Amino acid sequence: MKISLVLSGGGARGYTHIGAIEELKSQGFEIISIAGTSMGAVIGGLEACGKLNEYKNWVTSLDFFDIFKFLKSPFKLDGHKIFSKVRKIAGTHKIEDLPIKFTAVATDLTKKKETWFQKGDLWKAVMASSAIPGVFDPVKINNRLMVDGGVLNLMPIAPVMSDMSDLIIAVNLYGEEQNLDIKISKETKKKQNIFTEIWKKMFQEKENTVNMSIDLMMEVIFRYRKAEYVPDIEIDIPMNIADWYEFHRAPELIEIGKLLTKKALEEAKKQGKI
View 1 (cartoon, rainbow, N blue to C red):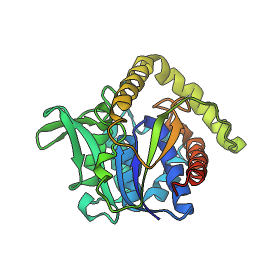
View 2 (spheres, rainbow, N blue to C red):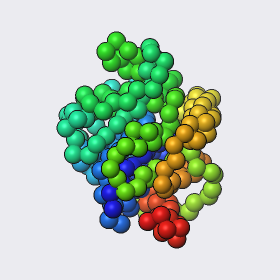
View 3 (cartoon, rainbow, N blue to C red):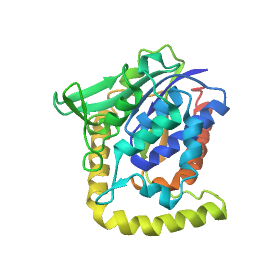
Protein backbone atom coordinates (compact mmCIF):
# COMPACT_ATOMS: atom_id res chain seq x y z
CA MET A 1 0.00 0.00 0.00
CA LYS A 2 1.40 3.40 -1.01
CA ILE A 3 1.28 6.16 1.58
CA SER A 4 2.02 9.85 1.93
CA LEU A 5 3.65 10.57 5.28
CA VAL A 6 3.28 13.80 7.25
CA LEU A 7 5.71 14.39 10.13
CA SER A 8 5.02 17.16 12.64
CA GLY A 9 7.48 19.26 14.58
CA GLY A 10 8.20 18.77 18.28
CA GLY A 11 11.93 18.91 19.01
CA ALA A 12 13.43 15.76 20.49
CA ARG A 13 10.07 14.02 20.33
CA GLY A 14 10.79 13.88 16.61
CA TYR A 15 12.97 10.84 17.22
CA THR A 16 9.69 8.92 17.48
CA HIS A 17 9.34 9.57 13.74
CA ILE A 18 12.22 7.14 13.20
CA GLY A 19 10.36 4.38 15.01
CA ALA A 20 7.14 5.22 13.19
CA ILE A 21 8.83 4.96 9.78
CA GLU A 22 10.50 1.67 10.71
CA GLU A 23 7.18 0.19 11.85
CA LEU A 24 5.31 1.39 8.76
CA LYS A 25 7.91 -0.11 6.43
CA SER A 26 8.02 -3.38 8.40
CA GLN A 27 4.27 -3.72 7.81
CA GLY A 28 4.70 -3.34 4.06
CA PHE A 29 3.76 0.31 3.52
CA GLU A 30 5.58 2.07 0.69
CA ILE A 31 6.30 5.74 1.38
CA ILE A 32 5.99 7.69 -1.87
CA SER A 33 5.92 11.22 -0.47
CA ILE A 34 6.81 13.03 2.76
CA ALA A 35 6.03 16.48 4.13
CA GLY A 36 7.60 17.65 7.38
CA THR A 37 7.99 20.60 9.68
CA SER A 38 10.98 21.19 11.97
CA MET A 39 12.22 17.86 13.37
CA GLY A 40 9.69 16.22 11.08
CA ALA A 41 11.52 17.78 8.14
CA VAL A 42 14.86 16.50 9.48
CA ILE A 43 13.69 12.89 9.79
CA GLY A 44 11.61 13.10 6.63
CA GLY A 45 14.55 14.43 4.63
CA LEU A 46 16.78 11.63 5.87
CA GLU A 47 14.21 9.01 4.88
CA ALA A 48 13.64 10.66 1.50
CA CYS A 49 17.36 10.47 0.65
CA GLY A 50 17.74 6.94 2.02
CA LYS A 51 20.04 7.77 4.93
CA LEU A 52 17.75 7.46 7.94
CA ASN A 53 19.38 4.29 9.25
CA GLU A 54 22.84 5.90 9.20
CA TYR A 55 21.47 8.87 11.14
CA LYS A 56 19.77 6.56 13.63
CA ASN A 57 23.04 4.71 14.25
CA TRP A 58 24.75 8.04 14.93
CA VAL A 59 22.18 9.55 17.33
CA THR A 60 21.80 6.33 19.32
CA SER A 61 25.56 6.09 19.83
CA LEU A 62 26.16 9.67 21.04
CA ASP A 63 27.62 10.15 24.51
CA PHE A 64 27.59 13.26 26.66
CA PHE A 65 30.88 14.66 25.38
CA ASP A 66 29.70 14.27 21.78
CA ILE A 67 26.80 16.60 22.53
CA PHE A 68 29.22 19.32 23.64
CA LYS A 69 30.56 19.49 20.07
CA PHE A 70 27.22 20.92 18.94
CA LEU A 71 26.89 23.66 21.54
CA LYS A 72 27.85 27.29 21.41
CA SER A 73 27.95 29.88 24.18
CA PRO A 74 25.89 30.20 26.31
CA PHE A 75 24.83 26.53 26.08
CA LYS A 76 22.85 26.91 22.86
CA LEU A 77 22.58 24.28 20.14
CA ASP A 78 24.52 25.29 17.02
CA GLY A 79 22.44 24.56 13.92
CA HIS A 80 25.37 25.01 11.53
CA LYS A 81 27.47 22.42 13.35
CA ILE A 82 24.56 19.97 13.55
CA PHE A 83 23.75 20.19 9.83
CA SER A 84 27.41 20.01 8.89
CA LYS A 85 27.42 16.61 10.60
CA VAL A 86 24.15 15.62 8.92
CA ARG A 87 25.68 16.42 5.52
CA LYS A 88 28.64 14.19 6.33
CA ILE A 89 26.30 11.34 7.26
CA ALA A 90 23.75 11.73 4.48
CA GLY A 91 25.55 13.56 1.69
CA THR A 92 24.45 16.60 -0.32
CA HIS A 93 21.17 16.35 -2.21
CA LYS A 94 18.76 18.40 -4.31
CA ILE A 95 15.16 17.96 -3.15
CA GLU A 96 13.90 17.54 -6.73
CA ASP A 97 16.31 14.61 -7.29
CA LEU A 98 15.28 12.56 -4.24
CA PRO A 99 13.76 9.09 -4.81
CA ILE A 100 10.84 10.07 -2.54
CA LYS A 101 8.93 13.30 -3.11
CA PHE A 102 9.72 15.63 -0.21
CA THR A 103 8.46 18.95 1.15
CA ALA A 104 10.08 20.88 4.01
CA VAL A 105 7.83 23.58 5.48
CA ALA A 106 9.34 26.76 6.92
CA THR A 107 8.04 30.18 7.97
CA ASP A 108 9.15 33.18 5.90
CA LEU A 109 9.43 36.11 8.32
CA THR A 110 10.17 38.55 5.49
CA LYS A 111 7.02 37.73 3.52
CA LYS A 112 5.06 36.72 6.64
CA LYS A 113 3.87 33.44 5.17
CA GLU A 114 4.33 29.68 5.13
CA THR A 115 6.91 28.44 2.61
CA TRP A 116 7.20 25.00 1.01
CA PHE A 117 10.63 23.85 -0.11
CA GLN A 118 10.21 21.27 -2.90
CA LYS A 119 13.43 21.96 -4.78
CA GLY A 120 16.93 23.20 -4.03
CA ASP A 121 19.47 22.21 -1.41
CA LEU A 122 17.89 19.63 0.90
CA TRP A 123 19.72 20.46 4.11
CA LYS A 124 19.46 24.23 3.75
CA ALA A 125 15.69 23.81 3.40
CA VAL A 126 15.55 21.46 6.39
CA MET A 127 17.72 23.79 8.45
CA ALA A 128 15.28 26.63 7.71
CA SER A 129 12.31 24.42 8.58
CA SER A 130 13.83 23.53 11.96
CA ALA A 131 15.14 26.96 13.02
CA ILE A 132 13.18 27.18 16.29
CA PRO A 133 12.95 30.87 17.31
CA GLY A 134 15.11 31.58 20.36
CA VAL A 135 16.91 28.25 20.02
CA PHE A 136 18.50 28.29 16.54
CA ASP A 137 19.52 31.21 14.36
CA PRO A 138 17.17 32.11 11.46
CA VAL A 139 18.27 30.97 7.99
CA LYS A 140 18.57 33.47 5.15
CA ILE A 141 17.52 32.15 1.72
CA ASN A 142 17.27 34.51 -1.28
CA ASN A 143 17.41 37.49 1.09
CA ARG A 144 14.42 36.19 3.03
CA LEU A 145 14.59 35.25 6.70
CA MET A 146 13.31 31.74 7.47
CA VAL A 147 12.43 30.14 10.80
CA ASP A 148 10.72 26.99 12.04
CA GLY A 149 7.72 25.87 10.01
CA GLY A 150 5.84 25.17 13.23
CA VAL A 151 5.34 28.91 13.72
CA LEU A 152 2.56 28.67 11.12
CA ASN A 153 2.05 24.99 10.29
CA LEU A 154 3.04 22.28 12.73
CA MET A 155 1.68 19.31 10.72
CA PRO A 156 1.73 20.10 6.97
CA ILE A 157 -0.85 17.84 5.32
CA ALA A 158 -1.62 20.14 2.36
CA PRO A 159 1.63 19.43 0.44
CA VAL A 160 0.72 15.73 0.05
CA MET A 161 -3.01 16.10 -0.66
CA SER A 162 -2.58 15.77 -4.43
CA ASP A 163 -0.16 12.82 -4.33
CA MET A 164 -1.28 9.53 -5.85
CA SER A 165 -1.09 7.55 -2.61
CA ASP A 166 -3.61 5.16 -1.03
CA LEU A 167 -3.44 6.77 2.40
CA ILE A 168 -2.19 9.89 4.13
CA ILE A 169 -0.65 8.99 7.48
CA ALA A 170 0.34 11.78 9.87
CA VAL A 171 2.50 11.53 12.99
CA ASN A 172 1.43 14.14 15.54
CA LEU A 173 3.97 14.93 18.27
CA TYR A 174 1.40 16.93 20.27
CA GLY A 175 -0.92 14.08 21.25
CA GLU A 176 -2.73 13.88 24.58
CA GLU A 177 -0.55 13.19 27.60
CA GLN A 178 -0.16 9.62 28.83
CA ASN A 179 2.36 7.54 30.75
CA LEU A 180 4.34 4.95 28.80
CA ASP A 181 6.68 2.29 30.14
CA ILE A 182 9.28 1.46 27.52
CA LYS A 183 11.84 -1.24 28.23
CA ILE A 184 15.39 -0.25 27.34
CA SER A 185 18.70 -1.83 28.33
CA LYS A 186 20.27 -1.05 31.72
CA GLU A 187 23.30 0.40 29.96
CA THR A 188 21.14 2.77 27.90
CA LYS A 189 19.09 3.74 30.95
CA LYS A 190 22.22 4.48 32.97
CA LYS A 191 23.58 6.69 30.17
CA GLN A 192 20.26 8.51 29.90
CA ASN A 193 20.15 9.19 33.64
CA ILE A 194 23.61 10.75 33.52
CA PHE A 195 22.61 12.87 30.53
CA THR A 196 19.37 13.96 32.18
CA GLU A 197 20.99 15.24 35.38
CA ILE A 198 23.64 17.29 33.57
CA TRP A 199 21.26 18.38 30.79
CA LYS A 200 18.74 19.73 33.29
CA LYS A 201 21.40 21.78 35.06
CA MET A 202 22.49 23.27 31.74
CA PHE A 203 19.12 23.77 30.05
CA GLN A 204 16.08 23.32 32.22
CA GLU A 205 16.31 26.36 34.47
CA LYS A 206 17.63 28.58 31.67
CA GLU A 207 15.30 27.30 28.97
CA ASN A 208 12.13 26.49 30.91
CA THR A 209 10.30 29.58 29.65
CA VAL A 210 11.53 28.90 26.11
CA ASN A 211 10.32 25.30 26.33
CA MET A 212 6.93 26.35 27.69
CA SER A 213 6.58 29.11 25.09
CA ILE A 214 7.48 26.81 22.19
CA ASP A 215 5.05 24.11 23.31
CA LEU A 216 2.22 26.59 23.92
CA MET A 217 2.76 28.37 20.61
CA MET A 218 2.84 25.15 18.61
CA GLU A 219 -0.04 23.52 20.48
CA VAL A 220 -2.38 26.47 19.93
CA ILE A 221 -1.43 26.88 16.27
CA PHE A 222 -1.83 23.14 15.76
CA ARG A 223 -5.38 23.19 17.15
CA TYR A 224 -6.40 25.88 14.68
CA ARG A 225 -4.63 24.41 11.64
CA LYS A 226 -5.70 20.81 12.31
CA ALA A 227 -9.24 21.54 11.15
CA GLU A 228 -8.06 22.45 7.64
CA TYR A 229 -6.93 19.00 6.49
CA VAL A 230 -7.50 15.61 8.06
CA PRO A 231 -5.22 12.59 7.43
CA ASP A 232 -6.62 9.11 6.86
CA ILE A 233 -4.68 7.83 9.87
CA GLU A 234 -3.15 9.89 12.68
CA ILE A 235 -0.47 8.47 14.95
CA ASP A 236 -0.58 10.46 18.19
CA ILE A 237 2.62 10.79 20.21
CA PRO A 238 1.98 12.12 23.75
CA MET A 239 3.49 15.57 24.15
CA ASN A 240 4.66 14.79 27.70
CA ILE A 241 7.09 12.00 26.74
CA ALA A 242 10.01 14.42 26.32
CA ASP A 243 10.93 18.10 26.38
CA TRP A 244 12.14 19.63 23.12
CA TYR A 245 15.82 19.56 24.19
CA GLU A 246 16.04 15.92 25.41
CA PHE A 247 17.91 14.68 22.35
CA HIS A 248 19.92 12.25 24.51
CA ARG A 249 16.85 9.98 24.75
CA ALA A 250 16.91 8.78 21.13
CA PRO A 251 16.84 4.98 21.82
CA GLU A 252 13.79 5.24 24.09
CA LEU A 253 11.90 7.69 21.87
CA ILE A 254 12.46 5.55 18.77
CA GLU A 255 10.92 2.57 20.57
CA ILE A 256 7.95 4.70 21.63
CA GLY A 257 7.42 5.63 17.99
CA LYS A 258 7.37 1.97 16.98
CA LEU A 259 4.96 1.00 19.76
CA LEU A 260 2.43 3.78 19.14
CA THR A 261 2.55 3.32 15.38
CA LYS A 262 1.82 -0.37 15.77
CA LYS A 263 -1.15 0.43 18.04
CA ALA A 264 -2.48 3.08 15.65
CA LEU A 265 -2.29 0.68 12.70
CA GLU A 266 -4.08 -2.05 14.66
CA GLU A 267 -6.88 0.40 15.46
CA ALA A 268 -7.04 1.55 11.82
CA LYS A 269 -7.44 -2.07 10.70
CA LYS A 270 -10.33 -2.53 13.14
CA GLN A 271 -11.99 0.55 11.70
CA GLY A 272 -11.51 -0.70 8.14
CA LYS A 273 -9.18 2.12 7.12
CA ILE A 274 -6.52 -0.34 5.99
